[in-house]
View 1 (spheres, rainbow, N blue to C red):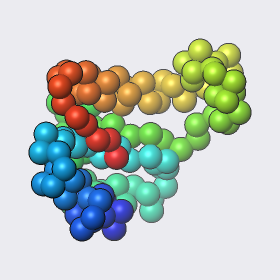
View 2: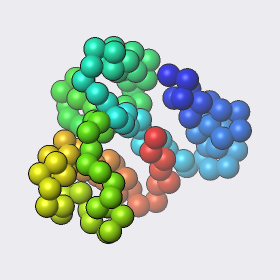
View 3: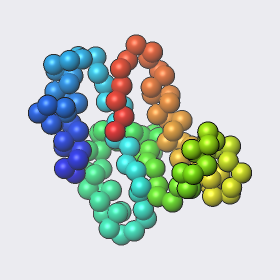
View 4: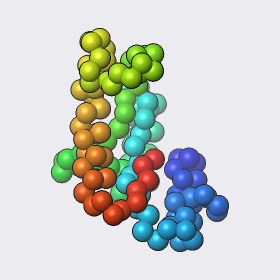
Length: 123
């Protein structure tokens, strides 16, 4: 929660400060929780995040509570160093990881490309 608060309100580099001082057209795409694990502790953290910052999360559908996120368990970064992209990797783990994040990535891509003149920040 401290990180989200800092992202938004840091006195020097927070999104709100940058928008007020440097770029009034800056828009926050939204918050993208990463390394989300299905443990009771992480579920409780996610509920807290939704309660505090739900309006900033990136909705992936019209259903309540469906937000973009990147779960834990992505494949090793080694193949990516060789220029491969996740959805083209031959390993089953890579294809499974892509299936888990594809909706989130596609949603963010639609938001970012919806207005070519916008300057956006993803967190």
